[in-house]
Image 1: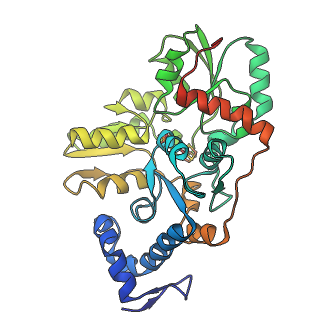
Image 2: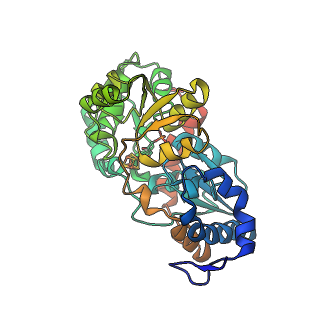
Length: 342
Ligand code: 13P
Ligand code: SF4
């Protein structure tokens, strides 16, 4: 077969490309229709060659579509795993197949490497919900109270914070501070859900994730009625009422681990749509019920955008060095552990 790519006529689905990518198609064939493969395969083949030529790695978040997640990403996972892998890599170029704050975190941890975000529109409603000035005002209102900042924030906001957290380690980070009160921002729901599980009192901010705020407790009840026996796993960016009626709450990696460990016959992941596709690709025997919401920011990242980023070594993430030093401290404290006054 020699099929021209709709977007890049120089990329063809030749028999060589078909052969090179056959093991990758085997990984995703449950979730990527065969009719789409002649479009994806030449892009995947070119990206994987370029990565080797340029000593580049691709970090892929769990919300990437399966052809990115399973076929070009070198490391995959939740925000915490991506940050940890960003520290370990010895590649010259890191391409973030995720959103801008994740690329910034990778750059903070690798100031001397080229970190690329394939589309500058890959933002986040949580990151946009709070500014550095907001954090300064909160600190003035609550003097001496440590600021625990979700990684879904800009470097400017991280620079004003004491320590970062992700949905995967929020409880551990807040409890580990050994203080009576914390400010937790910007996600109000993550903060409220964390507050139920920790000792300190939690002061919240008003940020919301556009994907997770849409789910309601009524949606979950309806799901259970139409799918008897379904196991409901929800992300802690959902409202507390949604978490209350779910069977498990955890980060995207937490949800994937739950499926791997418990192998429920029927499951719903109350989160972004691609997450179910990526996990379903590995567990064809599990029935995934799929009401989900798309993240418009994550979906800016396509194979075409990744190839463009690698070819042009764009868009490079740059952070002012003085600001980066302060922001890095908050991320490193999260990764390495920290107590106020230590
Ligand atoms: P985690 O992958 O860390 O659970 O985060 C979810 C998310 O919304 C990232 O944007
Ligand atoms: Fe931000 Fe929500 Fe999209 Fe994650 S899923 S990038 S938190 S808007």
